[in-house]
Length: 128
Image (cartoon, rainbow, N blue to C red; front, side, top):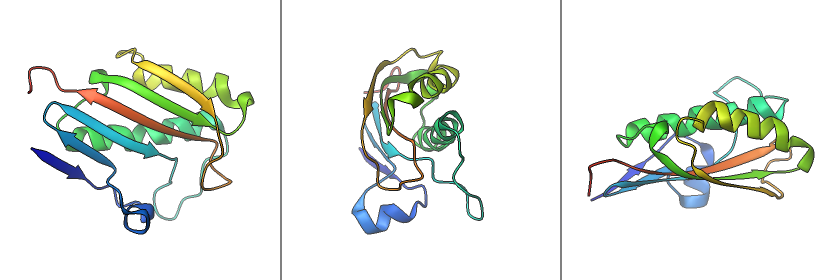
């Protein structure tokens, strides 16, 4: 079973991707940037941006039948090493219960306003 999750991001259509894919017991969440709700601006702080990424990821997981506590892997891409502490602290707030395997890398992102982008992978217990 393959289930494609959409979030309404303008990038889904132009780039041709799904916010998340559920394949059996696995949920793979695409790189998630801090895209704000319509009418709002991108948050200024790296920590607030990470929390927005977490909101988007949580919604995708929920639609796929998964929970944040089932996340086993995250990858964080930050645009400046100076954001590592704030992004790491927000990561702990969001994923601390799961304590996933995690990676943080300094990289360029598509929008210069973005300071962080996050990927996540979850395994749904008891599913196969």
